[in-house]
Amino acid sequence: MKSIKLALLATAITASSYAMADDDMAINLMALNASNTSVEMLSPTVRQAHSGVVTEIELDDYKDQQVVYEFKIINLEANNKHKLSYSVNDQSLLKEESESLSTFGFSDLDKDERLAIERVNESGFDILNVIPTLEDKYSAKLIEAELEEKNGVVFYEIKLASAEAGKQKLLINVDSGEEIPVLKHHKK
Image (cartoon, rainbow, N blue to C red; front, side):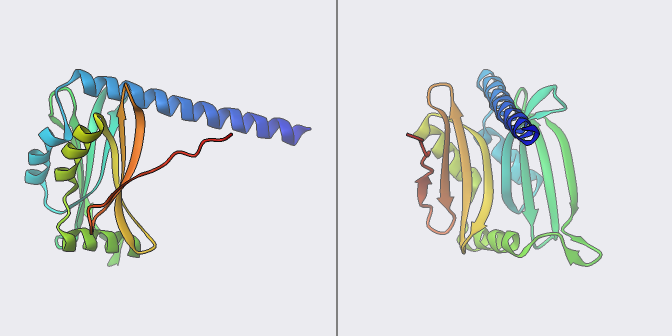
C-alpha cells in the first residue's frame, strides 16, 4: 500500500511539473508576442558574434526576471563553444559564455554531437535561415530548436507554439531540408 501511495505521489509531482513547464512556455510566448523580437531579427547579431554551427536555440527565462532567446554555437575549427542570451524586450545581449571544447586534451563532444556538427557544415544547412520560413508557414513562434543525430540521420528538432494552434513539433533533415511533423499519439 505504501508503494502505491509513493507511486501516486510521484505521478502527481511529475504531472504538476509538466503543467508548470507548459505554463512557463505560455508565459514566455506571451512575452515574445508582446515584443517585436524574433530569431530572424537576432540572426545577424548572432552570426556577427561567433561563427560555427548553431546547435540549439531556446526561448527561456533569465534569472526569473525576463524572457530571452538563448543560442548555443559550436565552432569545431576554433575548438570552442558559445552560449548567448538575448533579451526579447530590447534584443540586448544579457549573457555570453565561451569555453573550449576540450578538457585536458579530451573532447567534450561525444561522437554523435561531432558527427551532427560536421554534417551541418558539409551540407551548408543554416537553421537561422530556416526558422523564419517555419514561423510564417505554421503561424507560430520558435520555442526551441536542437541539433540531433539518430541512426545516422542528422536533424533539428523544432518546437513552435502559438496561442491559436498550441505547441507543434517537427523534424528538419539537415541533408535534404525535408520537414516532418511529429504526430501526437492519442489514447482511445
